[in-house]
Image (cartoon, rainbow, N blue to C red; front, side, top):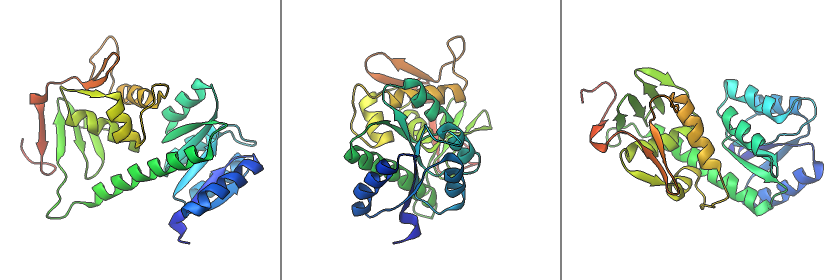
Length: 252
């Protein structure tokens, strides 16, 4: 088993960790479990893992604090386990930098599906970043004051970098490519979260809210991303204002 196939599970429920292993190991993953926050953080930062499954309620250091510390130095994908019905936990987790969340108790098959979806989009992002050869020069997208570079996965607003998670970057990329057009929530869930749309899943809305805050959108100020009630979202600038560049630093 290659090291890159390892998944770290940080959860104090020993039985649950065992169950997770039973479902993920046949999928080709090696599971390592840690049952308290402090040790979990140390393993996450010093081990070679493909992904971390992190419970919110942990002894020693809670899951939110573990996630904050991880995000200070690492972009490793994190799937957050939250208590069912605790919307605040999900919102806080996504704001801190979780890639996705899953309410407990959960169907183990759903856990496998969520992990597969996270890995698909993170691996796709890595491939995009690598495609900078002669035949594949990713286009820099410009809309108004926002510049998005798929090659380096850097976003700038008026020349200043905007720090985004992998999910947030992908979300903004989809919306900017369709600037001036409505993008449905169904399409965003499929393209950004790599799963089927459910009307009860508000994950995409939470990610949109986070991107809005990072771009400085507010009710009393400018809005880059507007809500189309009952349909989806639109990047507010007309499509005619969107330009692309075949490489950074070229003239439009």
